[in-house]
Image (cartoon, rainbow over all chains, first blue to last red; front, side, top):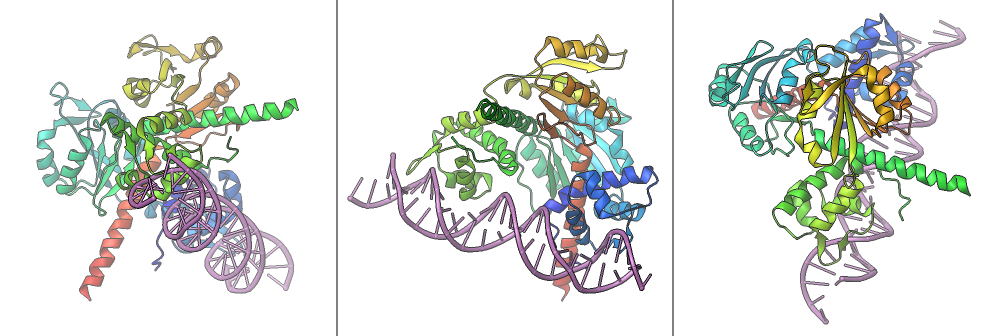
Length: 221
Length: 221
DNA sequence: TAGATTGTTAATCGATTAACAATC
DNA sequence: TAGATTGTTAATCGATTAACAATC
């Protein structure tokens, strides 16, 4: 099997393929060619074939790709064929939003615990999951094989909590705190930095303004 | 001035520079060299100099960069020197989380309206902002110069609402719905696809497992 | 068999890194 | 002036696209 190292660029695109294939599947489309998929997705057919070939030949010459098969194979690559146990650290607005987001459960991500330091909410429930005290987190980690921790806590606390989680055997950190965590290379990491996303959006508005101004100037001449 | 087209790769990195410079600034650091910044951020000094030079010479040979000046200049590039008016479409969990996130206000993003279709919550307030009916959105857009709309609504409704917003003059869409919006090239767009981020995380766990298994096999020999 | 479409190699493009002259 | 560090050009690297032989 492939010793090829899958580039981060390819991994970034996989969930989007998965989403499009899921839609095709629910529309009862049986087969699709890289050309047709490329037109729907707005990418090149070449890229699709190149990407998929990183994982082995999923298609068939003269036919294309079987939608259901390809959907399932990409699901396996993404690790969606087995359950992941998730805990949420920080039951603020974002933490509660994650807990309430049913799509995650559907994809095999089971939220098995929510933790917070605020005594006012410890003991209450979100979606049937009790909010526990941070003081019982270590014991909880010993009792449960937790895969993923979503960090929705203030940036000041995030590095220490992340270090503790690593010590207690976490396998992946989904970081919503606006700071960079320095995790060992054995622990997977994904950052969701909403403030940065919003700044990029603002930056893009500015770029567009300038582009339009330039075009106006050109029109004048 | 520069006719250079700023690549999307550079724009993606700018908010992170901005964050690090903000931290240096609050630690009263006056000047910094690309070398020192590169060590803190885990990127090459070459890349920092290359990136910053897209926008003109912010540094000084033999000295480095003035932290406050550079911070403000990048802020301007990101469009943070002027206020942005933001509305939130969809007052569910994510919409409410955004409304409650005070960091945005600090950076000049003013949330001036929240909209929803649910009669049970229309009229109530989040952070002092009244939740309005979607039926008054068109009039609201006429009365207010809205820059950015955060879409935190189900994916089925997102394309139509986005099209309406474009018609009514929105300048940028911050899309949280798990679907691709096809906006005209004059409207800026940023997608936050949480489910995709979580899948990538799961994929990375898998990749690490395989890597570790391979190393174990090697150790056996 | 003829047509279609993949898998894969080669060519191109763009982004990152290295190197160094310019200059504070 | 000597040392430091930028701005910028050149070299390298990796990712994307094009092309086409293999094959269903």
